[in-house]
Image (tube, rainbow, N blue to C red; front, top):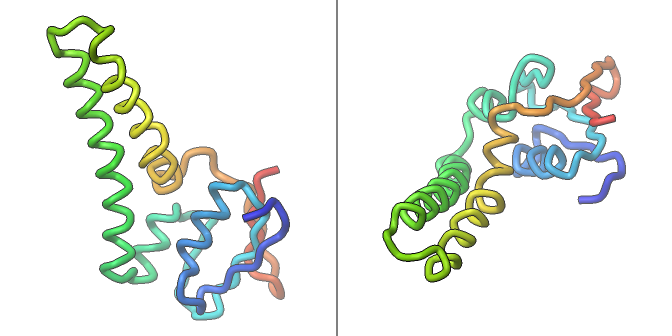
Length: 133
């Protein structure tokens, strides 16, 4: 997604995934709750909005897979460090574990727990404006 203004409607099929991607790219978002889900980005994280919107089993599985990738990376990193072999022989395992943690699930975790919250404004005709400026 580009850094341009993006309009996301809660009535669209993949609105929460689109919202997460827009958060990740730090784009300015207009969130319209036209499905009347009662989402409130001022007081809710993306995880809270997902709970309120009754996400499908498939969507929750995607979140859990992201968290699982991060956990696998952490496990690989700890096991590589605890291995009695010299670090020169297990450098690839340490690097892979760090990469899994940083790339695989870390960004999803940061989005779900609400780190670096955006600026949120509400207007009557445009819904919520979410920006990172």
